[in-house]
Length: 113
Length: 108
Image 1 (tube, each protein chain N blue to C red):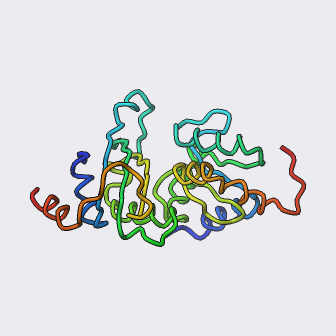
Image 2: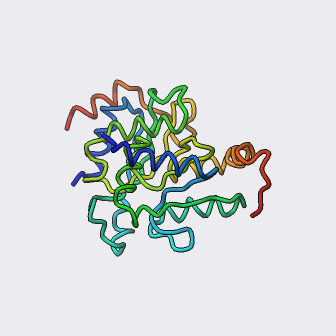
Image 3: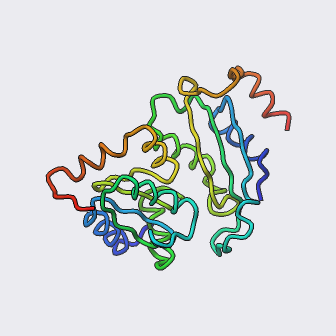
């Protein structure tokens, strides 16, 4: 069972960011090819995103897998919804499905990128 | 450890898959920093299953992860997934009937 405090912490992170990527490393220095590929997709779309480096937080690293019921990192949340991992993000991007999702998420907010 | 063939048979059995192709990409990550939580292999898997019909990619991937729940994080460190329902499948070659696949899976 996921510790309630940890669960609340994750919930707060997801709520506080329109786009949140749980990844290994940072967007500037990804530590894994899948995390690298995921942030590059979002970089190319030009919408702002936040990232959590799970390598710096063992609790989050394990907890996010339970929270999302998803066994791998990276994990992407858009507007509070779990979107998927690297493969899904790349697939959605290639089908031009990601941009509309981001546009909807940021609708009504001034986007600066 | 799990061999690509064991992985393939497991997916055929668990997901009634009509086509499974497994590529072991572990060698491409041989120099990558050892992960203390999982020293397992890296695999790229392409799966066609009738269980994927009407499901989103997210749901399809969840089914694969459920089928491999024991292996994820132990013998499997990373899994790149391409999932298709039989209608979505655009790969080369026709799909075998499920009967012949079953025979193949049980001869092991």
